[in-house]
Image 1: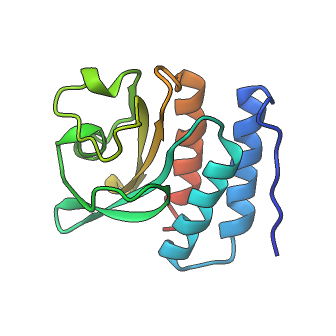
Image 2: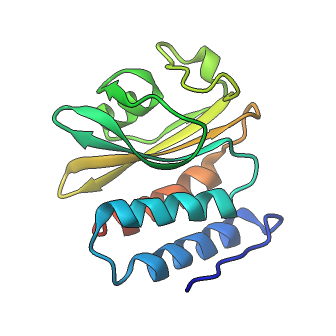
Image 3: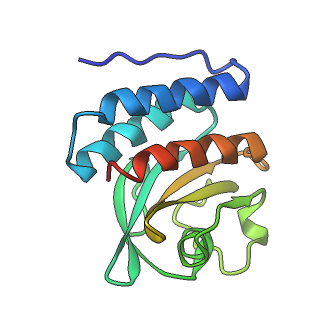
Length: 160
């Protein structure tokens, strides 16, 4: 049984260090990618304040397909290159969006979302999935958040 708790008021580098450490611990001995994504979605929701959605979209047969998440029901399929998630997957680059309503082609799965951070999970040059974080707050995410989630994606690249 794992019991991961943290103080959301920690400085971001320490908060993300603890999140990555928890991810490493909970996924270390598990080979099932869905189980690992499910637990990490729960960890992100637990560790990161001011989120209304935290989870994964998997690259399957040339599109993104909804994976494990914490939050309201979401879009099931997203074409590569469309919306924030599809752009992150097709470009293999992190997308940090301060105001989703200003992002061309934004796909609104939850009307409450105002900012978004999407980080691709890449193994051997291939995007396997993306980590998607949504917040009801404008400009919720910054470069420290992006760097922290990119470290998390690096751990997950060999565990999903």
